[in-house]
Structures are given as structure tokens and as C-alpha cells.
Amino acid sequence: MQARRKSCWRQLQASFFRLLCLIPTGFPVRSVDMQRATDNITIRQGDTAIIRCYVDDKVSRVAWLNRSNIIFAGQDKWSLDPRVDLVTKGQLEYSLRIQKVDVYDEGSYTCSIQTKQQPKTSQVYLIVQVPASIYKVSEDITVNEGSNVTLSCLANGRPDPAITWRLLNPSAEPLDGEEYLDIMGIMRNQAGRYECKASNDVATPDVKYVNVVVNYPPTIKEPKNSETPVGRMGTLQCDATAVPTPEFEWYRDEKRLSNAQGINIQIHGSTTLLMIANVTEEDYGNYTCVASNRLGIQNASLFLYRPGTGRDTNGSACVSQSLWLLLASFACLVFKC
Image 1 (cartoon, rainbow, N blue to C red):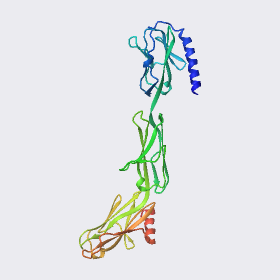
Image 2 (image 1 turned 135 degrees about the vertical axis):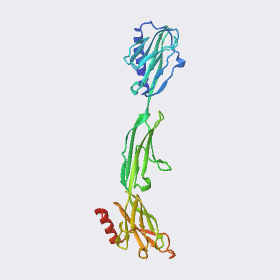
Image 3 (image 1 turned 180 degrees about the vertical axis):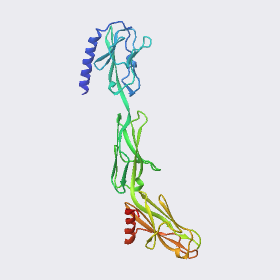
């Protein structure tokens, strides 16, 4: 492959030097300063590239080539591209300027001269870099806990960008994944905002986000009993975590409670309160809080008791195993009773 490139380059040189003989000698004659020639120039897409060529007064003809195409012969412009012009400071520089560089400008550029003694060339390879850009990313999704999830993030750029993932929880640690992030058996603590970052050190990394919602059944957290004297307001509080937000019901024995005289039930997101305005002896006893969503149900027992009876202030949460309670709760969930 290397030998083929050298052979092609020798053929290109021979063809160009034959063509140089046809170029007029109106341009001030100088020769290329080979010590100041650059092998490679790296430029970012959209920027301006200046490909340097320095000459002295021994030149009879000079020109710029891109591959096999003549761009300038002396000061005569052969290219039709309006982005291309010459930079000629005094009589020492014969440089090529390309504005708003794009990927199709990448390639070999040759400053070629003819002297009385021998032809000389200075070859420069222009490398065009493109900032990383994410062109496709997964949409926000909602899944059930335990499901397998694959998030995708596709990007392009030159050089090829590296893709990294983070879950933007407090730690925001990097995750194991590139274009595709696989999450097997996703858990509730893996819900949140996922960040995909594409970077190739050409410019500021491109960043996109995917929101992942994980549904899971209710879990009732540390229900509290209430110690309330007769004649005072008693309040029982029940908190549950769940996605979607749970629906709540209150029971006394097997009777479902509702807002009625002396009883006020309030629901605030994932918290429900059962308030008894004027506690009597008949109000003391066991109450059941039921939290449910379409993925499951859980209940907890809470006690309203007279001061001094010595009952522990912590209730107990357990999965409902009472058939009547399960049936009643799901029936109310379905029929919105």
C-alpha cells in the first residue's frame, strides 16, 4: 500500500511539473522554504484553515494543488470555490486560505514551484475534525420493576466519539455502557435521569438525557400509633412509597371508613391521615391503612389508644393476607367506590 502511494505521488508530481511549464511567470519569483513546511494541519469543521507556503526570489513559477486539481497558478485562481483565496504577505508568503472548512476539504494540498535548478514541492495533509454530535437517543420510558431495559445513544464525529453514561443520582457514577446501556432487572433505585455524553476532544461534549420511571408496588413505612385522651383529636398517619402514587383506604375492623361526622380522611400524595375530631371510648382500637396501585397492595395496622395503657408507639406493616380486605380493596380500586 505504501509503495502504491509513493508511485501515485511520483506520477502526480510529473504531471504537475509538465503543467507548470504552461503557467505564466507574472508572479514574483521565489522558492519554497522547505524547512518551514508542515506535514499535517488539523482544523475543526467550520473554522478557517491557512496552509502555509514560504518562498524566496529564485522561483520562476508557483502554484497550489489539491489532489490533481489546480487551485491557484501564480495569482490566477482556477478554483470556483469562493471560500478559497491566497494569503500573500509581502513577497515571502504564498499561503492558501480556506474558510468554513468542511469534511470534503480534507486531503493533500501541494505548494509546487519551478526554479531554474529543479522543481520543489511542499505537501500538507489537511485533517478536518468534527465535534461529537448525538443524533439519536432513547425516548423517556416507564417500566415495571424487574424489567430489562436498553437505552441507546448514537453519535457521530471525527474522530469517532466516545460515549459514556451516568445515572444522575447523588453519586452520578459512570455506568458500564457505550452506544447501548443494558440494565437487567431494573430496580426502583435505578429510576431517574440518565445522562449520555459523546466526546472526542474537538469541542464541548454533546449531552442528552433520558428519564426512566420505574413502577413498583406500595411499601408502607413505619406507621405510627396514636396516644390520645378522650375528648381530644386523634390522628393516625400512614405513609407509603409506590409508583404510580398509591390509593389509600382506611378500615375499622371490616368496615371501610369514609368522611363522616367526626371522621376526616386526608390524602396528600404518598401520605394519608385519619383524624377523629372528638375521641370517645368507642374510638379506641385497631385501624387498618391499605395502600394499593395496579402492581400490588399492602396494609398496616395502627392503634388509637388511651394514655397510660402502655402500648408501643410503633405500628406493624405487613402484606395483607385477609381475603376480605384484598377483595374489598381491589373492588374499590376497580369501581372507584
